[in-house]
Length: 545
Image (cartoon, rainbow, N blue to C red):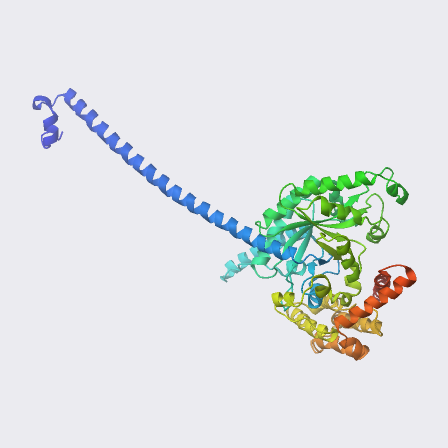
């Protein structure tokens, strides 16, 4: 139609005629050229997109590598701090090693590695899920009211288990112990921990998996704790999940026993156990260690040198007393696996006892002590110098000067408890805070009167609330604790230095060893007295309630 107005078209027509053949030929030429231009444009666009995708992929890979390097760097720093602190560890103890008691221990020792109570992973996950659901409901209501959204979920309940104190000295070298048997839940719990870390509520040095608790509630119904000793592959998977959940930023360690009684016919009896094949038992322990470490994540183990009796209704106390200690197993592991580190737990109750273990096995990484710390924390006030040879380096690292006596300990602890009551409800937390310093004067004249006074201080907010009265007109809790100490304890006791107290302890140990032939009889008596007084006080509180 436009051949006459287009010189190009006109030139392509033979003899200038508008016949159908010519038009079809022209149409084919033009269509072919158009297709070739389209193909060329598509090819150019494809190469351009490929270049952009390559650039994006390269940037993402570089960012991923940077994040990986960052996580690795953080983990290396944490691992270095962990290994420099393991000579003495505060063992994890339910209802004792909360953030308040850990603060007391840190006031006494800048180097001791602190362990939390065991925290159940499923409790963390469920609480986080519930608080996020509550946040969603609150934001829906806020949107309907035209209010700004709330960006973060309420972590107050999670902080009760995962939080650390915010008053100097901060916890420093510390380990969060988790309990559970589901890798997916364990990973989710660890992610929740890292969220709280990012929000500034905690900063742990490492994670620990509980494979040693023999309590029927844990190893029985819960199917974790010491029950995991019978499934090393699951332990490997759990620790891998913990590593992944932390983004590879935290070292993962395992606290376990030397085995269980699961292969004993007709259940555990002491006679049958003492006659069993010790080499077979040790071989099974080695297989457990090797399997758990096979993923390349775990290289640090804390070993309670007893088996866990799971076939009978043994209480945790029975499991600490009836099965015999086998320290030689741990010492053999130290020499057989130099690429790993091992800490000994069970039966060591004093600084001198811990020191003796290092003399017996110089390559032992650490000694873990629990109930003796709870029974008489002041007896470990020289741990930094006796075990670490520390002349103040730990204090410089944490940025504080250790108290010179127990009066200064209470004054420093007062800052912590006042800050806690400013943020949390005294009705709920005060008894935990007074409990943390209850045994600070164990074995001292009038120490029991001091404990009774603390018990009254701890229960006062709840008592007043039940009567419809307020505790807000009372003096600060720090003043109440100091008043109880100065009222019932002598100046000599309050101002005695750690060195003077340690010399007394060594003298008493030597005297008792001469009589009883035991190097740690004094400490065992203190622990026994502490356990007895604890039961008496719990009974009196229950009767009063």
